[in-house]
Structure formats: structure tokens, C-alpha cells
Length: 130
Image 1 (cartoon, rainbow, N blue to C red):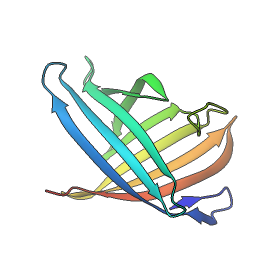
Image 2 (spheres, one colour; image 1 turned 120 degrees about the horizontal axis):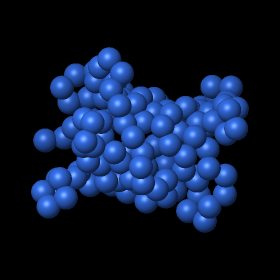
Image 3 (tube, rainbow, N blue to C red; image 1 turned 60 degrees about the vertical axis):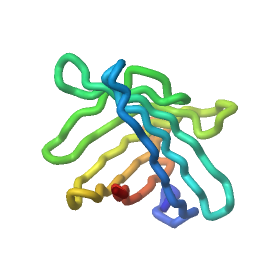
Image 4 (cartoon, helix red, strand yellow; image 1 turned 90 degrees about the vertical axis):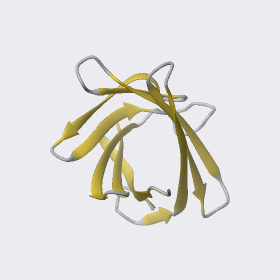
């Protein structure tokens, strides 16, 4: 669910993530496709690898490279800027937290802000399909 700055639900989506391990680069490549209830689709293309200090370093096609992830207790955190549209525009900050709910399910909470002002957020569940 995507929410506005007041918490009102703006729209819903189904997220499908498809990934694979690239042994040559020791990286995980995955694509997230957001299938929105209004018929729109957003594609996020990621590559992630373990950095020298044990943290993970990620790149996303529109956000760019050098995104550092870190663990906070049992949660995994990412913070980065990314335009909302493929043609550019404002680049809000996405602050993302993954919380493991079970071995196959993670809760994803995202806060969006621009110049420190809240724009909205998103709540999603990621479930591994074997």
C-alpha cells in the first residue's frame, strides 16, 4: 500500500521480485516489478554485493550506485534518493526497513521525504516462493 503524508491509502500494488546470483561478480541481481491497482507498472533493477566491511553495497538503475545497506538489530536498512518517474524530476529520499517476520516473509516499510518533509510511505510484505 502506498500512503500519502497524512497516512491515507493512495493506491495498492503487488510486487514481484525475480533475482539470481551472479557468481562472476559475487553479486545478487534482482528486478522488482510493482503492479499497481490502476494498471501502471514500475520496474526497479537492483544489483547488490557484500562490501569489504561486511555491509552490503547496492545499485539501482535510476537511483545509481553506492547505496549502502546495514543491519540494525534484526532489521536491514537502506536509504537512497531516486526519481519517482523515469524521465527524472524530484529525487525524494527513500528510507527502507526490512523486518524478518518468518523464514520466508519480510515486512518492508518505506518512508519518502523531500528536503526533510514527509511525502508518504509504503508498506509491503515480501514472501519467498520456492
